[in-house]
Amino acid sequence: MSSDKKRILILGGGFAGVYTAMYLEKGMFWGERDQYEISLVSLENYMVFQPLLPEVISGTIETLHVISPIRRLAKRTRLHTREILEIDLERKVVTLGPEFLPKTKELPFDHLVVALGSRLNSGLVPGMREHAIPFKYLGDALRLRTAIVQVLEEADNETDPEERRRLLTFVVGGGGFSGVECIAEMNDFLQSAVSAYQSIKASDLRVILLQSADRILPELGEDLARYAHKILEQRGIEIRLNTRLKAVTAEGAVLQGKSSPETEFIPARVVVATVPAAPHRLVEKLPFEKDKGGRILVAPEMHVVGSAYVWALGDCAAVPQPDGIMSPPTAQHALRQAQTCAANILATLRGTPLRRFSFTGLGKLASLGHRSAVAEVMGIKLRGFIAWIFWRAVYLSKFPGLDRKWRIFTDWCLDIFLPRDITEVRIFFPDSVSRQHLHTGEMVFDQGDFGDKVFVVISGEADVLRDGQSVATLREGDVFGEMALISQIPRSASIQAKTPLDLISISRDAFEKLVTHLPGVKTSMNEVLQKHTATRDAILKQMEDAARKS
Image: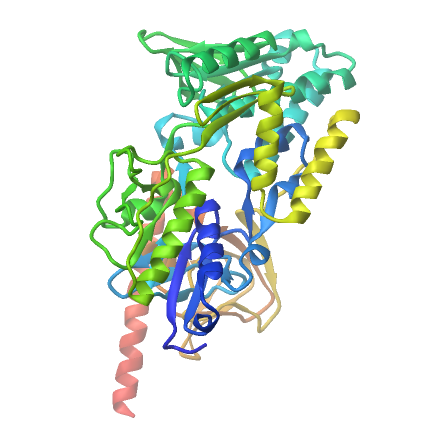
C-alpha cells in the first residue's frame, strides 16, 4: 500500500465504529478511494446488534442471526482482529497484540477514531467478577442461556429443598433497558422451558430484578415505567426498588436497601449483572478531558476537545446534542454520530467546512417479553402488543444486511408455532494453564516475540539462544518467559527444545492473577526475575567482551 495515503484508523467493532467505516466508504468520491486507507480494529470479526441480544437468551433468535460480519458491512475497510495494547498519540501509532504468532503489530494513522464502547465495572461489587454473569456481549448471552439450562437440569433431579430453591432462583442487577429486557426474556424462556421438566413447576421459579432507583426504566416517562413494572410483576417477576447488589458469592446475592445499612442474602445459582458501566481501559489512559463518567469530551463536530485528528463517539464519548444534553449510549445515537464523524473526517481531509452533530433522538423502545413492549416515539406513547409490533418493525428495518433481516424474520415466525429449544450447549474455552510437548529442535518462542505466556519445564532440556548462540540450558523445574510479561518487553532470547520437552504454559491473564492475589507467588517470581536479569546481564557482558577481543 502506498505510504502517502491518508490513513484513517477506527478502534472498535460496535455500532459506532462499524458505521463510521461504512459512512466513510459511502462518502468517498470515486477518485478518493486511492487517496485514503480505512482500517478498523476489533477483537471480533462481527458486529453484534445489541438491541436483539436478549432474544438470544430465550432462543427466539438463532445466535448467529444477531451478528453481522464486519467484512461484508465495510467491504473496503481493512479489518484487524487483534487486541489493542497501546495508543501512542505522539507517534500516531496504535500497537496491536499477537494473533497466532507471538508478534505485535503497529498501525500508523493520520486520523484516529475512538469507538471502544464501555465495559461492565465489576470491580465495584465484591464477587461480581468471579460469580456474576455479565450481560453485554454475544458470549455473555450464550453463557447465560447455558447457565439457565444447566440449573434447570440440575433442579429437576435435586431432592434437597434448600438447594432446589437456590437453583431455581435468578437475580438480575439493573433496572434500565438492558436489565429489564434481559429479565423479561429470561422469564419467558423459563416459563416455556419448565413444561419439559417433570419435577419443576412454574410456581417453583423465583425471578428477581434489582433496581437502585425508585422506579425501573428511568429513561422512559413515569407512566410507561409504571406500566412496565405492572406487566413484569403480573408475569411473576419480583421487583426490588431502591435496592442494589452489594456483593455476589458462589451461593447467591447480597442485597442492600438504599436507606438501610442492613443486608439480605438471596440464595441463587444464577446472578446477572447489567450495571455499573465503566469506560474501556484504553479510554481511561488517554490524556483527554473527560466527564464524571469517564467519557471523552468531544466537540459538536465529533473531534476530541483539544485535538484536530482524534475523533470519539459511541458509549466512550460525551457527545453534546443541540439541546445541551449529552447523547445517551443508544444504538440510534451511535449511528447518527458515526454519520457526522465520517462526514467531518472527509471534510477535514478535503479542507471543507465541518458540520455539527444535531440529532436528539427519535424515541425510546423497550421489550417486556411475551409479545409486549413500551415505546415513546416523537411524543407518542405506545404500550402492549402494538408497541411490541412497532419495536420489532423498527429493529428489523435497522438491522444491517438483507440476508440477516430474512433470517430474523423467519426466526420470529417460527417462534410463534414452535416450542423454545432447551438444548444445553456447553462452550469450552482454551485452558489458561495447559501442558505442551515439543520434539527435539522445536522452538518454544523466538527472540523478539511478544511475551504472552510463562513456562515451567516438567521434563527434558531446552537451549536458551541469544542471537543464535546457546548461552544456557533449562532443565526440570526451571521457570522461563516471565521477564517479557513482567517488564512488558519483547523476548530477550529464543528457547529451543534440546531433547523431547514437556512444559506447563501459563497465560498472561492467569499469571497476572497468580502474582496479584498470591503474595508467595509474587515473591518467588521477583526472585526468579532478579536471577534471570543478572544471568542475562552477565551473558551480554561476556558476549560484548568476546566481540571486543575478536
